[in-house]
Length: 334
Image (cartoon, rainbow, N blue to C red):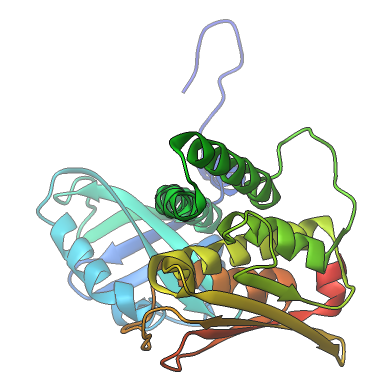
């Protein structure tokens, strides 16, 4: 490769190697008859296999995550008859964990030399993790929007029970929705609004649960009894998300779905742990849910374990659900 007016650069093997290393590209070749695969140093390092002899497709297959294995085998076989460029991603299992690999080449034996095909491997772990995080966020936002519609409908029913006129109902509902909005700010703080001071655990529960009490303030059908404990800004956001999810489930299926139902929230501290017990009574008869649980349950469990170093456990007596939240006291104050 050259052009007039300058020295002629040569794309020799050394320069191509430099370019491939800069791009993070691992090279591979595949003997379509013997299934032997050769790779450069970057390819071997990506797969986490030693370079001490011939490697076959079967050898590399043992490193492919089992859920992806059949798909990868079928995709490689299809490249022999499908013209044009191809790309597919899959997971491999290494000693240091799971990595995503993207393989690329050209199909229909284009560029074959003898019986050997060529292509590249790329470490696509960061890209796939970013895609998964984006999909998770989209799912979380969709889940919350659906919950908010359910909550708004339930708050309208609560307001209607205690109002004598439509004017009173409108005022009551407006106040409840405004309170819900303030509680929602704890789940998604407004960017640029500055950091919040640490909050009291009791005050936090009171703000989050006030919209669901018949009088619009905690103390009637919703009762909160917790000791003095400080909740830091980061922990408040996570705990608000958890309480919001539990309250939504109660509004849909539990004690807050009927006029006579009650909710008691109590708390104890011991051995560096804060334990919150959420007890529902007077609602419809409950039974354990079937299956692994929905998106909300997974979101709550992940938030508690990852952000607050804790866990969540459910009990299902007929008179109402009992939910136990365990959190690290240090994490809660952070």
